[in-house]
Length: 454
Ligand code: ADP
Ligand code: MG
Image 1: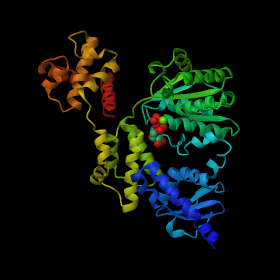
Image 2: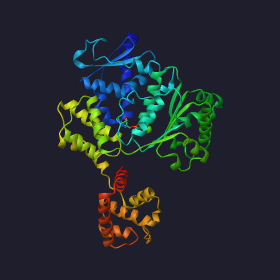
Image 3: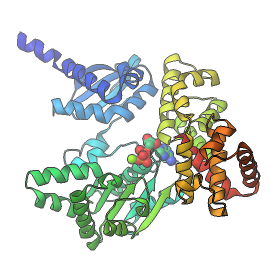
Image 4: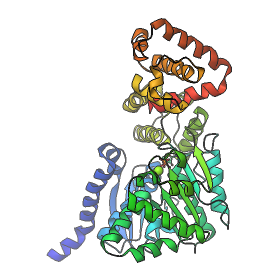
């Protein structure tokens, strides 16, 4: 009897413990927006069956959390193979029902290849929105994914946070595997590379470690800036890189900066990384952000009024990740309340995100960023040198200080080597005039503004 009771409840118990873990992983608010609405039903033929209130929620939860839930469940019970989520009111539905959506294709092989487990099924080329700022990186990734040979080695992708580097790398992996399931593809973060390497050192297992990497057809290492300053890992990475390059195996590397800007990276490694094609992803433009919003709301089948979309594209400029966060929140609201949001509700729901996006920069940060951008010394921001090469960036910094901070003109003047407020006024006027006809200057200012607000 005791035994029976335990059996009846054990799946429920597993689910309760997984819920606690999910809350930890995704945080309280994301958990209560989505996962809390999931009701466990039963395990049927090794498939975990859940219910959720709407079709949209089923799809969303499945695509965003399905893999995680399954892998957590498998840590506790190896026999489960898949997960399905049905809408509440058609509990009798079976596999043939249109609500049935399976992960089978993407995860049945997970045991075979631990590394594919790292790949996000949402990160495909199809779901990547292309615009001016990312078209070079996108085309380069497509080339690598679709070629049978090695078009450039390595492909080096770089750009700021949340602009799609990881998405593109996963997309290469999915596409390559589709074209040739037998290829050995390995994707991992540089951090994980280091972790595995150190583990191998400790277990005196480095031969196996080396072999594992050197037998792949495609190696992708994400966020390589992470190993800067980690000498032995850098060294090992360098050898892995060379071994694969010698065998003409494709590599794709990402970082937050270009190889030449990755300070602290060993010189010989830096030069190797620049051997192939270096493709950068620029900050998003307004148009791209709008297209991304349109694509995402279409995919999840929620309506948003045009003015709300435009508002988001204007306000949430830091990264696509933030934009997704905002949309998720609006989508949750739409789904739960059952009607669309208007501008006022959107502003209300997104208060904290908008505030973060509006965050004020300090004059010191502005001077530092501008100096970096134009390759002048920070001290030139305070100096009395008047040559154009330093005077112009200084004027731009003053202009930005006026626009992005709440400092008064005299305060700004003081921060720029004790200049008079009339000098500041002059600088602002000058820059306003110049941007009218100088599109590269206005672009510089846009980039600086955005990066100072992130
Ligand atoms: P990075 O690795 O550069 O920090 P990610 O690849 O993790 O950025 O992207 C952050 C999020 O934004 C992901 O969910 C990704 O799908 C999404 N994203 C980024 N760029 C695009 C794009 N052009 N189209 C659609 N989604 C995008
Ligand atoms: Mg990334």
